[in-house]
Amino acid sequence: MQARVARIDRIGGPEVITWHDVDLPPPGAGEVTVRHEAVGLNFIDIYHRTGVYPVAFPAGLGSEAAGVVVAVGEGVSGFVAGDRVGTFGPSRGAYATARNVSADELVHLPDAVDARTAAALLLKGCTAEFLVERCAKVERGQTVLVHAAAGGVGQLLTGWLAAAGATVIGTAGTPEKAERAKAAGAAHVLLSREEDIAARVREITGGEGVPVVFDGVGRVTWAASLGSAARRGLIVSYGNASGTVEGVNLGVLAAKGSLFVTRPTLFDYAIGRAEKQAMVDRVFAMLARGAIRPEIGRTFALENAAEAHRALEAGETHGSNVLIV
Image 1 (tube, rainbow, N blue to C red):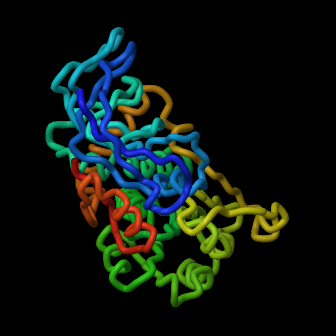
Image 2: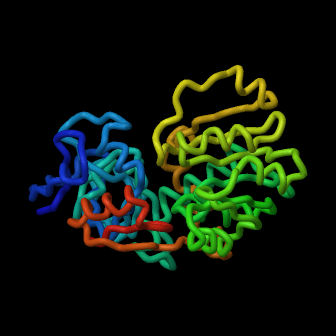
Image 3: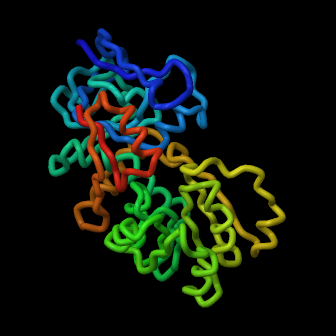
């Protein structure tokens, strides 16, 4: 089977993404051949390309895709040709028209969800699920802070939290993004480029601060996160969109009120096929009830992935973005 596959041979800008025609071999033992219909674009793809998260070269890109099973290898159960499936990793190589992937990384997709929506939702939706329900364990009635509440994960977090009975204070970079955060369910939205976030959070919460902060931005929001957390509050630092947080001073955590900090990753919360499928089923249940509404900001042709990376890095996108095969 012929496939068109993206590869990087060094770290660098979007221009290091190159495309290659390959002969895809039959699936090996435990593998499934999947023909992709849509591929998710995520900031972690940029981290791999730029070396924030080191990879061995040559390297594939992308971990999230939706498509159709073409063939199954020896020992595979639970999947047959024609099944609609998705994957959100952890292996890379989703920037491809087709690929062989371990059956343990695949999940079944419901008929009611099209491939484009699935590719926009799998990784980000499962991230929202584990952050809210199994990492921070947010409770009804709590007030929480969500940085970048109009972003791909941010919008889903905001909707999920609102549906769970939490009051969401969101941050956004522009008034337009602020409106999208409000539409997702934020009760308050602060303009990160104009307002003192920590001071406004204290004002909204009567000086107490929030028990949970979700921070996917990283370096530039770290001080605001520290200043916004309530005594014994939890800062969930789950992303590095502005750069990594380095040199965390434990003394500051004490001075700010005996704070807790965690830097979780999805695949410590998504172990094995059964757990992945349970997460995905929960995400699609939240979609069906209208709690989350994934906004597909832009779509790009698969081989325009470099253009998509440039737009994402420049902040020219919103919501979830998808590469169409």
